[in-house]
Amino acid sequence: MMDSMNMTSAQQFPGLRLGLIGGACLVLLSLIGMVHAFNQREIVSGVISMGQTLLLFTAAFLAYTAAARTRPEAAGRILASAATAGLVMTALLLLLVLVGQLVNMRQVFINASPALFNSLLFYQESLPAGGALLLLAGAVTGLGTGLLYLTPALWRRALIAGFSSLAVAGMLQDLIAPVLSAWGPLAAVGEWIFSGNGLSVTGAASLFILIAGGTAAWAAKGESLRRRVERMETGPKRRLKLASLLVAALVLLILPHALGLFLSEVLTIVGLYILLGLGLNIVVGFAGLLDLGYVAFFAIGSYTVAILTSPEIGRFTMTFWQALPFAILFGVIAGVMLGIPVLKMRGDYLAIATLGFGEIIRILVLSDALRPWLGGAQGIGKITKAQIGSFEFASPQEVYYLLLAGCILVGFISWRLRDSRLGRAWMAMREDEDVAQAMGINLVATKLLAFATGAGFSALSGAIFASKIGSVYPHSFNVMISINILCVIIVGGMGSMPGVVVGAIALVGLPELLREFAEYRLLVYGAALVAMMLLKPEGLWPEATHKRELHEADEPAPSTGAGRAAASPR
Image (cartoon, rainbow, N blue to C red; front, side, top):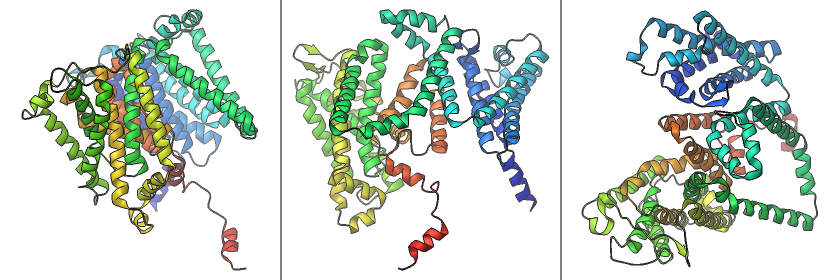
């Protein structure tokens, strides 16, 4: 009885518990050096740094969670719970500062430096003044987050979008500002928005108003506009769709020239992962076959092009386009060879077997026995670039178009396969193999076609990768590639083709843009995956069927009377 009473009390007022959890997270972020490293960049010049934004975001997120979990949902209790969470979190940070003043923590935690403690105290010379300011900031953050929770959904969405836009613009200022300055008319806008190290105060206020207002307007009118478009006649609707596609195509064509060399390189990396993700999405998302050796087909495509085009090997002198069909063919054959031994395997056993296949390929290309053909640890260099006439796909801005064509081709094939007879067989097999077999689906042929199709797409991306880099090495094809591609699919949404694009941008593009903080990349990666699994397990852009399956419990059950009426015979 006492345990149930304590549990009920914790559920009614979770601010203290979540405050302790959040405080531990803030202390961890401080001691591993993330706060100090991020403080080097300001979000709003002279107002808030990136490190302080990191602490503020973490505190606000857990205070919002405390507000959402407070029962009963009385306004006073919600505000008290959120404020308590914020206050407890900053109290633990203040405790860290006090311990750091009394004990030399740098013998254990090298990042527990005076510079860190000064930033936590808002650079106040007096410890009591800085500590009071820190506690006040926590209480205000929690109280503000509680008020945000009580705000109507329309304005809450607008405010979150506005603050998020400031954080993103401040983090990516070194990339956005040069792009704006390169476009003559927008140079003045860039100078007005950005001021030295961070956003200017006026620029930040204007950006916030623009994004928040646009989000509120779309939330208020977007649904009616969508219905109006759906009610349009076939002719105007088709013309509108065609115009949208033309605008999207124009944007994609001019994108690398608008963004510059560095961002074009980031786009090519994202494009490679999209191409790989679309292939693995067929195996894992459509057919439900967990493949952790997917990088093997990527390596096969790369090494096939390298062997057939590189003068270092000296056995063949093909062009890229002549070698490309062989790369895809060998990838498909390897996919079938992998599929045959694992036809009876499911789940974890299938994952381990495919993981072993990937390691076998990596060890083979690394071996000295195959050095005359595969180059061994030295790899293969001087790989021929893709070329059309006199135009060579050499720079990132040129390779972008090669990858764009590959993504469009693979995306179109995946889209056509998804709704085909074969695609429906894959999805039936994903749901239940025994039922699918009972319905007359040939599991052997269906599984082999899934492995072969995904392997062919992976080999295509490997061929483009080899041509882009100009050399291949065994260490470029480790198991982390397979895991990263699987993470892209999970975060984007299993079985969703738009989700692959969104997942690649979120997990590959953003970390590349913040490469200066590379030592914390895997930590952020893991935290993002954990948050995704807890908050949005269906992915950022989920497939409709998968989303419905995961949210069946959230749908309201039919009333007892209705169910009885439906069940009673007439």
